[in-house]
Amino acid sequence: MYFATNPWPPGMTERMLATLKQSCDQATNPGYTYVLLDAGFDQALPTAFPWPRHIERTLYDDTPLTGLKAVAPLLLSLPSAPEKQFTWFNELAESCTGKPMLSLIHSATPAPALATHFRPYLRARTEDSLEWPVRWADTRVLPALLAAMTPRERTHLLAPLHIWVTVDRQGEMMQWSGQGNPHPEPVDFDCWPLDDARFSRLLDAAEADAVIGSLHDTQPDLFDARPPAANHACVERHLAIATQNAIAGAGARRHFAMLALCLKDDFSTHPALQHLLKRTRAGANYQTEVAALPAEFWEQCAKETA
Image 1 (cartoon, rainbow, N blue to C red):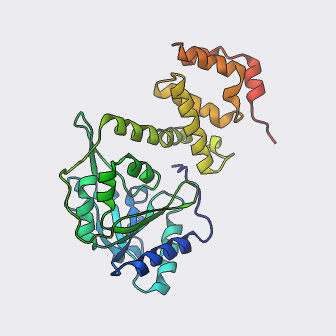
Image 2 (cartoon, rainbow, N blue to C red):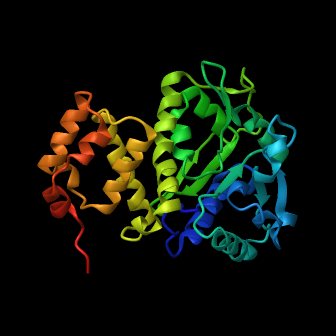
Image 3 (tube, rainbow, N blue to C red):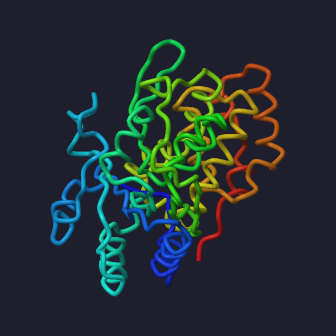
């Protein structure tokens, strides 16, 4: 499966551990340091030496999601000896082979209490009572999830944390800070409530990855010309253009994203494509309009080959 995330740049593991150490040094008490690992991307990794002896628990233990324990987010404790942390964490990061599954947490609470604190946020409930698991350990969606929270929800979720550190699609470090409260008050819900607007924003944020995954299954060569994060940005940008111009339906949107990957970057500004977008805004069928594109459009927008 293709993951639209760039490889970590050299020195990233050192930077993340240095940020974690700084947080520990500044805290009143040392607290607890964990790796949050998403087993959904590699179920075999948590069972490979030496990781099993560091597993504190999964976030799905004793929850309605316990049946999904094989793909659950896990809390792994870092080695206590600082001189061992870099080798251990670096090997773990390399074992993830670019999958978006790894972040560091400095918590004021131990793993059982931290898992209990996270429990109300592990499932989301929409206004029509649809419930779905929320994958906080997937670093592709973590920023969008935090952005979708109300200020009160985000403050509460981060309350027991001193810091949460991860790496974004481009290979840049991201971090969020909490209060480091060892005894945060519980919330008044057992399932994260999402209104339709926030739910729609999360669906929109996830669409590019879904389209990329579908395209890569059948046309992997489309993704060779750009770095992974640039492929994601390209698809995301053109899905937004599709939305603005009333290109609806999964097939039509997938096809428009495919054009973005295989044609020149400025193909959407070509007069023929601009005419197509004007027509779809007025209600014309996308596939019909694509079939009517003139030969010169394809000739002028084709990528140059070496």
